[in-house]
Length: 386
Image (cartoon, rainbow, N blue to C red; front, side, top):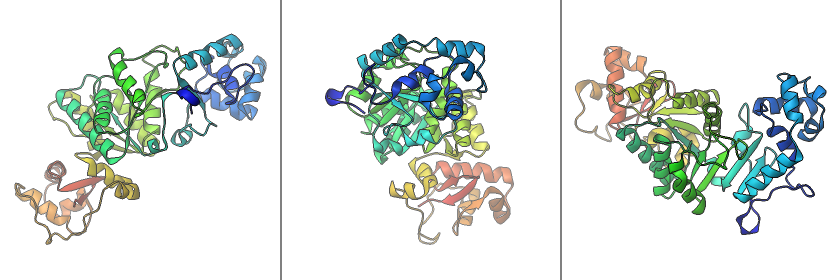
């Protein structure tokens, strides 16, 4: 990704080793996002041919009208030179989809970034990553849990992916760093800007200590806009094996990330919050809708199958008679834990076997998860933990 001295290799007029200029000729045009970019490549066969086409040829591509074609034609060599110079000045590498350092996980999402701007370093280990997202205006509890999960994941060897925003994102990044782990912050603006400004030292630490990267798909000087963050969320989930939502209100952007993650086939985890807190309404709804309740690291590892086992999770291999239940369980909790002695069951199966009301079963199972007795699997299936 970098040349000697840590400076990124970028292209110039006479020598373009990374083939960036055709990409930038399209990418710098206002209105050419990943969807239009993908259609152009599909229509013309490759990026070079698409970049050299005429406005009339571009207009034959779905979604490109006269104005957008004019904007594309207006991109100059001077603009491309300025973009490359700005990236070089700020030690930012620009990766095309064909570059070896471009994350393989992003190539596989529906609308991968045409270019990925990287300040810092993406390592092979960053392919083993979990996203941690949540509210910007988080509660003290939410911040504590984001820091805790960032640390748990970092110590276990996962790279923590988040959005670099205030609140939950910042706490997750800090938790990963404090635990000696790696973290990647996905920005909703160009990397010539720092947003939020108070995280400048945090971002510098990630880069200076070689503990991860700050990345964006947006041109270097692209400003912060509210519409940027929805697109940013797909990169957070795209880089992750699963996404942990720590705290979110009913209309939080973190819920958009959770929805995108589910659409991408990733596991969605939710950290339960106070039932009387508006900032927990979103995550608690996720749990009701089938997200995996995450009370500790094992709840995450268990969902990751063979990878989870390699990272430290071992399924319960003892029978109910071999290990006693913890003290403090009520009658319903004890009955339900006993029903799981021979293997995982759904809520409906647990209700039938214990003859308890379904509402009481759901409440008791939530408490058993929080007490570390059972783990919730995808599809509201529950299993005894080791």
